[in-house]
Image: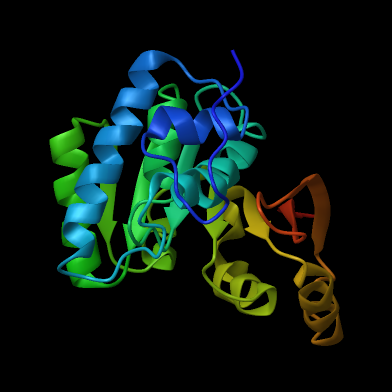
Length: 221
């Protein structure tokens, strides 16, 4: 059955409807857990600014779409470090749709880290929350993949993680159309000589003409 149409400026009334509009199919239990996550996140959002995606349509079109694009590039059982988790995207979404992953959320802002603790506990997720900068966590533990979304420009990311490649398998990040400019900036600064950058996937952000990409950054063999 085709999903019911609605005015473009009217958000979907349920998560299931918003997922159907983007032709996203998930197991019923995962939809329920994502719905629980939305409600808890929006409850916290009234006290502390965590997200601008405060209806189901925006949540799916931005957060779920990006998280699933990352999930498609992750191997079974990988150890994942979500850098700058904020309100939990993509890390909490990944933990829900890919329960095989070993997810750690890192957040340097104390009040946001405390929110993540609460979300993980109330959602009963097997997820670690690290209160501090991701670089400090990497000094003590190895991860297969670091995931990054909406944290910083590429030149800053490369600089931050340069000392920690012995504990990083690869970095997978979501970027918008400015990624080509960011790559050029990082190359101009001489930051990419020892690194390989690959575009793993490209897709249009729903409701816009903007193209998003999933990029992989790794150390040259």
